[in-house]
Image 1 (cartoon, one colour):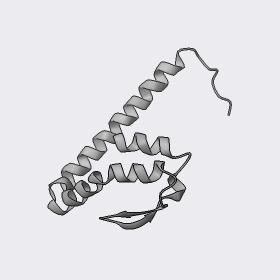
Image 2 (tube, helix red, strand yellow):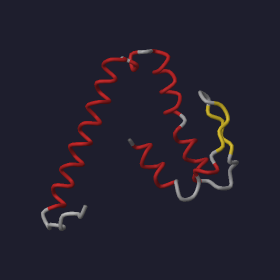
Image 3 (cartoon, one colour):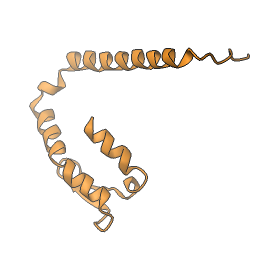
Amino acid sequence: MSRPPINRNDPPHFVEKLQQKSHQVVKEILEMEMLKNYTCNPDYMKMWTELMDGQEAFMEAICNHSKSSKLMIKVVGEVDILHLRGKHERIIKKLLIL
């Protein structure tokens, strides 16, 4: 099966399709939250807050290669972060902003 020829008008449609897909994903996340109501759970919120409070130490451990590759995360325990250093640092910084 051959592909249709590329049209100069395709990029806007492509972006529009991505936006629609993104809206659908957000809608599904919101529906899931409404069904499960997990953000009203005090245990969930306590864990989330503790994880968010540790963001700065997490990024410091990833970016500072002179520090140990083992990081103690209060909620999770000891985590090896060596595989996150280097090429993944930029991506991790962007993800934490979300």
